[in-house]
Image (cartoon, rainbow, N blue to C red; front, side, top):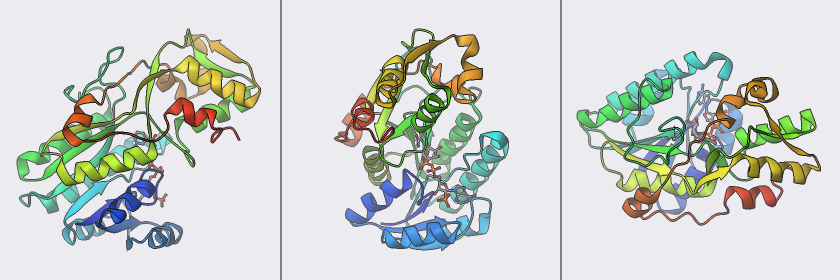
Length: 295
Ligand SMILES: NC(=O)c1ccc[n+]([C@@H]2O[C@H](COP(=O)([O-])OP(=O)(O)OC[C@H]3O[C@@H](n4cnc5c(N)ncnc54)[C@H](OP(=O)(O)O)[C@@H]3O)[C@@H](O)[C@H]2O)c1
């Protein structure tokens, strides 16, 4: 398949692109800068210069390919509403092109906030009121009714591996800054995780065989206690690990405090069974122990 990939130059996109190419697909990657364009070309992809805020480019990319993987997202937490609006427009634009074609549109989403305190399975529906991105996901999955083989890859909040610049990297930075590696309360709340390369593999499988309206879980570790994460980071940095009172979490962790306080284990049993996905790369604990984040 010739596949249009938004966010192809990102942390996960740079795993998805080689996964597609080495399995015989061709990639047309969206790049908004010369640097991203060069990285994509070096990875063997064709490049479409454009921006998530430019519908014409998205329309062209979706029109001239046989399927879309949508990973691009503006991670600007200070201007999150604008990011959500851009994402909604991008999904509508590309979905409109694919309507009636039966072609696949796979988009990245998350397991956070689905059923706090319980193990989230693939059968748990998105609650559009829970989070603006969940609302976008509901609209996106609705494209199934318009003849798009749309599917959601709900990722663990931590997609990890060398080069990660997400939540765990931020935790390490905060620990360095504060001189203590914190966890909230007793730190028994759990964070699911998946290695970036296993996530890349799952996006390819979803492209090839997820049904219209399907939801799969990019989750390898069902839930690592946050205290375990903090203790390994502390040991690796030579800093103490310590409990942070829930009421002090905002001051200590900033915007990350809200996420790090969540207990959101998630299962991928149905994904493994239905997609034949079998994560093989190191888990979060092994990756932390390997020192990628603290070396
Ligand atoms: N990483 C995780 O732990 C995690 C967990 C759950 C869900 N997700 C979701 O998975 C998806 C991919 O995440 P990621 O970690 O790979 O993100 P990332 O490393 O931040 O990459 C974001 C991608 O979006 C592109 N992009 C940003 N703004 C753009 C714009 N205005 N126009 C065009 N492209 C733009 C970036 O291009 P440049 O290279 O040019 O900057 C990059 O390719 C996102 O939807 C993310 O929210 C990630």
